[in-house]
Image (cartoon, rainbow, N blue to C red; front, side):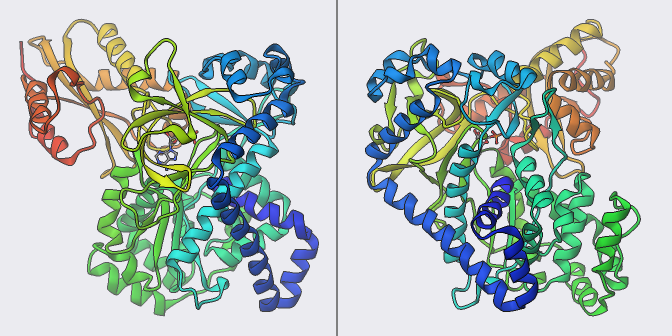
Length: 607
Ligand code: AMP
């Protein structure tokens, strides 16, 4: 999503010219600012009206998109293999091309990364390999092209317009909409042939800031943080700087982040270190512990002045406690833009303590592979997304068919309200009938396009910041730790949860032993071993551990019979026994409290 903000700006500059726009801004002051913001609004509003128009003629838009994709890619090696040139109808395509997963593309994509020969798969230059964790923990590289970025841009901008028109004061000029962004990036790496690789979010944003002066100026107009703050790679230091510049402004009207987790993490940092923030605002400094390079420190420091008035106001509010703090320190705040569905649900729930009555807007649903939906009804709870017909050719596999050898798929117009499906996409950047692994539920219609609620990700389990550590990885790590450390412990059951009341956040793993030796096992040794194994199988987890964005996991032994009691408790909520699967990720606070109360304070039950 961050990357789209960058692209939004880029596209605007592309149409007006960077130096011209930059000159206009610096020389004409507020008039120039207003004009640029007006231009930006026109572009974004058009994207929303295009989206609405597309939903009124879904079949035609989808068919045209599919045929455009096949024509675009017909001369690639992949396109020749399936003879795209000869395909004339949707049903011909469906009969000739099977459903796929990432594994069907892995060797082609790795080949492109090594040789740079993108014509194997796509006709356009690959601008970025977006890194995303695979189901086995092995990194997936999803090709991004200019056309794919453009389709993201249009969808993202549509959600921006919704946010602006729904929450912001319409009498205020666009320049009065000031955002505090908790958007951090990490430097992109490159493949052996020089193609950038990294998370989709970091790539575009960094590129945009480095390339266009006007991007920096527009960031200044729109957000409280100077553009250099978006380039700080140490996570906590970046949050500190976003917060410091945000706290200095009383008139923030919105908070923006990719995920609810980002906002929660930042606000928890504020709660922990608020005295330091007050001190720094009081004397106008960035404290020494913040990890930034000397040039950035100097540039940011030059923007600061002692502000004892603001420090006094903040001290008064922080001293009263952090319940509903956001509105007390930013009285104009009218919404928080971040994803609150799926894995983000539990963070959003925890964030409510700080946000009080401020509404959230979960504006978009997208993946590195393709954008999927935009939330056109911000008041709707739980948030739901209208599928965007121009961003991919969509098929849906009914939940009951997901594990079938040859599942049957239906098109965008054939979903049944109330039923759940796995999303499948054919994208503009080289993926065909690709099973995304996400399960969504159709909850209604916007014109002819389904409105969906995100249900769950098929394989992913633990996910603080994109590492998506799967059940399989946890289990493999646990089993190998037990095996390699002797036979003191045999595991009966296990489950996990994400602990975010500590900083850094960490995984907690609950174990019930079938058998345990008389001498209490050293859980620390198991824990260290697991951490090592997960790190080895999941690059993103390793990076996050190295950067201290995820703390060392904790293992807890529970009393005998705990999981049986847990199962009974869940079944009591109305689930059928034959359908029952032990949850490997606990998110329900009632179940978490329940299992916490059954943790053995002596580390377990001998024999
Ligand atoms: P990535 O490709 O790493 O950006 O991850 C994309 C995945 O994040 C999607 O396939 C979903 O599983 C999840 N995701 C993205 N947006 C949402 C959303 N609005 N609600 C729930 N899950 C989401």
